[in-house]
Image 1 (cartoon, rainbow, N blue to C red):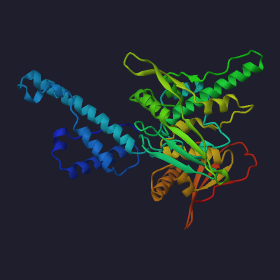
Image 2: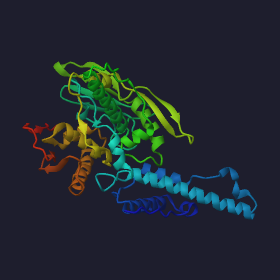
Image 3: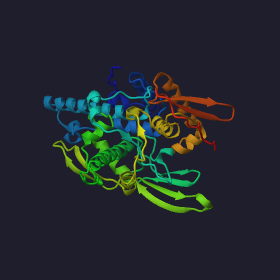
Image 4: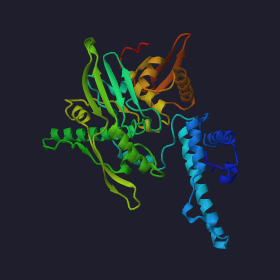
Length: 408
């Protein structure tokens, strides 16, 4: 679908509105934007409305004080140019804000233009290592929101209490920041495979480094993102959130609470180089011990689950969480989870009824735009709702019992 530029009211026209009229206009603008860009219509909350109103107040070239200058042809021309620049900046800000507030009607976003060629050069996609005390694919070790969220997320599972905590200034890592973690894990797994092949040939290779040094272009390519817009700035902000987000695991077995450990999603990071335009070019990330040791010291098979290459194209945080849950619970067969249990494991701050509504919408969209690997069905009764996840594969699935989650 072609993208149409937003036609915005001038600053003067918008300023003449009352607060109620401004909010009404912005809601109409959001509805029009959703229709133009094939996105879900949403009711803007007060924070979103406040942010959009502020964008209309931004000024460009304010230091010129053109309002106080003589009405010469030059000053008039400068004024028109300043207003043109300001209007374009407002349009970009409003468009970016509305993209954050609305959700694509499709399950998958469009892949970048050069995606077909680039996919030949990226390794398989692996998720977090599976450890004896906890499997991070059982929960969301991040916020499902596209925007940074403050506070903590707690998951009380059968034998453990998992606490996800972000930095005071950065907030929690988001599900989209987590793409960088997946890139780091996948790159390490690829290096371990190469090491084992060379070791098997008697070549005495060196163990993979604990420092991962990718270019931002490589990260974007791996995550199937375009290289335009604010992507480079967003990568730097994402690294900050990932480095400050920790996973604390408390063992609950035997009726006693015992602190097991506290793990960062990534270790320290550094910006190694920038481009001539100031964009981040290359970064250095220290792989945390719990990731490195789990993968490098694995005896035979890697303690990892692969993800479908289209995982990165899933447009919503909820959709990505459901895919990870299905990959862990259903595998190559099928699984059924109570929606209340899914809500608990998602870490979503939404009330259950709103979470159920959004899950219903996601499942409905997958009927027209299928989720990678899995078919989703919502089974509702008077007192409960369950999500049925079935692997959609050509190969016969191994004989495994149906995974069933207990409702809480």
